[in-house]
Length: 253
Image 1 (cartoon, rainbow, N blue to C red):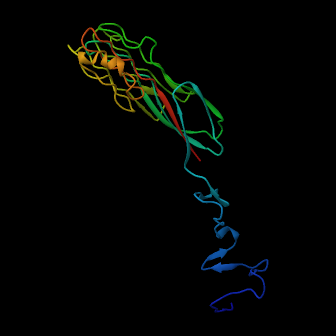
Image 2 (tube, helix red, strand yellow; image 1 turned 180 degrees about the vertical axis):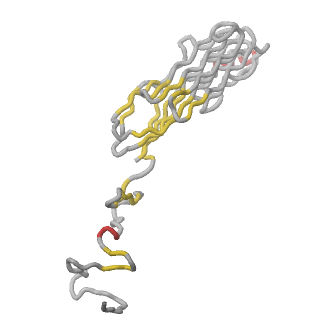
Image 3 (cartoon, rainbow, N blue to C red; image 1 turned 60 degrees about the horizontal axis):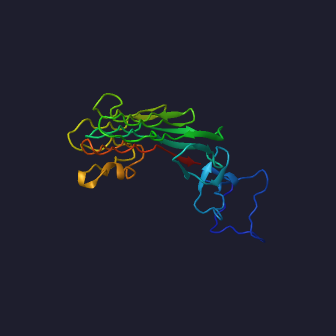
C-alpha cells in the first residue's frame, strides 16, 4: 500500500476533487461518501437534522402548534404531526349558600400516536344551566369532557347533590395515562365557608361578606377552568356556578 503525505488536496481544475468509481476515500476506519457528509443547513433555520435509518434530512421537530377548545369541536391533524399531548378537564359543579360549595371537574392526560389518524371529536363539559343556588338547594352538576374514544373526565357535583348540606364530590379522569380527581367542595359552614373545589388548572372564585352582595355569584367567572362554584354567604346569598371544562392539544412533529 502506498502512502501519500500532503498538506492540501486541490483539483487540477474546477472546484471538485473526484474519486473514481470503485474507489473510496477513508478517514480513519470510515469511508467518506454522501452518507457521511451533513446536508447543507442553508434555508433550514430552526430545524433539526433527523435520521430515518438510511438518510438524513433537516426537519421541523418538537411542538409546532397548540389547540385549545372551550366548546365542542373537532381536532384536525396538522401536516407532519405524529404525536399529540392532550390534557382534558371537565366542568365543575355549582355552589349553594351557607358555605356549601361545588366539586371540581376531573382531569386526564395522555400522549397519543396519531400517525394513522386525521381527526378526533372533542366534547367540552359545560356547567349546568341553572348554576348556583341559595341555601339548601341542589346546585347544578358539571358536564363531562372527552377526547374521542381516547379519554374522558366526569364533571364535579353541585352542592347538596350528593347529600344535603354537603359539598359536591369531584369528578375524575379516565382512559388517560394520568387520571386524577378534582378538588371536593366544602360542606355546611355557618357563614360563607371556603371556596369551591380547585381543578388541575387552578382555584375557584372568591367568597365574600354580605357587604359585597352576592359576592361569589357576581364574580363567578373569575375562576380557573373546571373549578367548582364557591358558596354564598349564609342563607340570603346565592352560590356561584361551576366553571366550564377545557381541552388542550399540543401537536408534535
